[in-house]
Length: 261
Image (cartoon, rainbow, N blue to C red; front, side):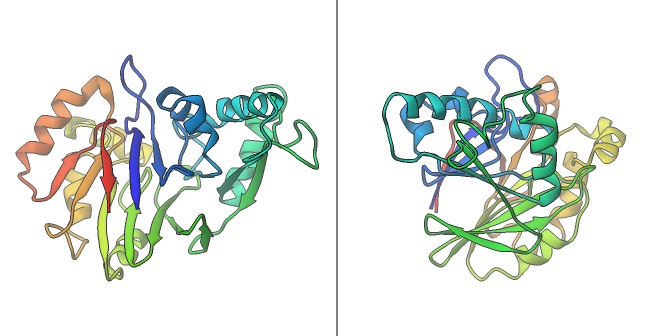
């Protein structure tokens, strides 16, 4: 399994890409920045997007992936005609009504036709496993102000977990602790400790609350934990606070990282 970090930040400034992870070239976990990070041919290889939730930093580039895919079709390319978007039914409803509604963006679930669209929306449910391109992906509910799931990703005998955006939560740690060959986790850590109240009300973690969450993880210190969703504006303070915890096998992601499992 190869996980390429296309973006790992919870805010957008020059040089900082929003959240998106590419699994084995064809599967995206969230879509904050793939069209900023990938050339057209690499974008064209994407067949599936698993959306954790519908905050803009996780869905923005579905719009531009769809637009680019439509132009690719018009150029005469006939393979990889569609992108399948997998998410909770509540999230798909938001994408249809509030994003791909012909007001904010064209409805690519009906372009170029309803029978052969660019985007296909496929609902998934909490604790449901979907297999695509040889990878099994299970949605796991987490604690965020809108419906949100992290994901358990499995290929062959290896497992990896992405928490998505979350505050204090339980189910994902139960799942993590039950995996026999877990190779790593990507975990929310958005704000410095001084912003604890903001983190709590917005469903995110600080270094201190992240450390409390990791105490629920039986394998902590034995496998890598990667932090993501850092706010660029406070990155220096956040980095210093994470480093001062001296937690083993833990580091912040960068958008040049590629994880090989």
